[in-house]
Amino acid sequence: MSKKRPYSHTKKQREIKELQANICIVCWDTEKKVARGHHLIPYSEDGSDNILNFVTLCDDCHKKYHAGKLSIDIYRF
Image 1 (tube, rainbow, N blue to C red):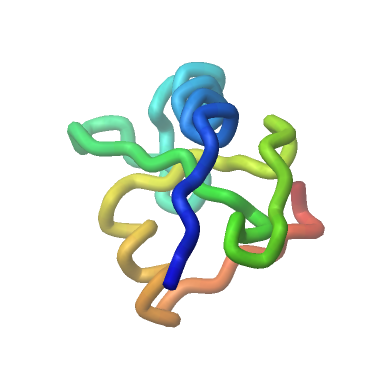
Image 2 (spheres, rainbow, N blue to C red; image 1 turned 120 degrees about the horizontal axis):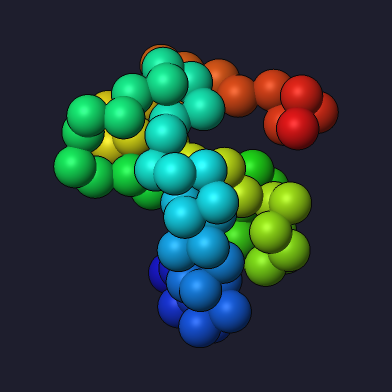
């Protein structure tokens, strides 16, 4: 069972989307209405709420990532 994220993580997810102007770091899409603040090191693996642990992904790239169809080199960031 996954644990509920603390408010600090939710706040940082909103902040990274604002900082990155809701632009997906994979496909550079700016037209889609939904952007996701994505943990580079997952919260479920004790990923921190440090802003450096987040990137913005469009909904399509976010779904591809979680389906295993897209990989992100976390050391690139």
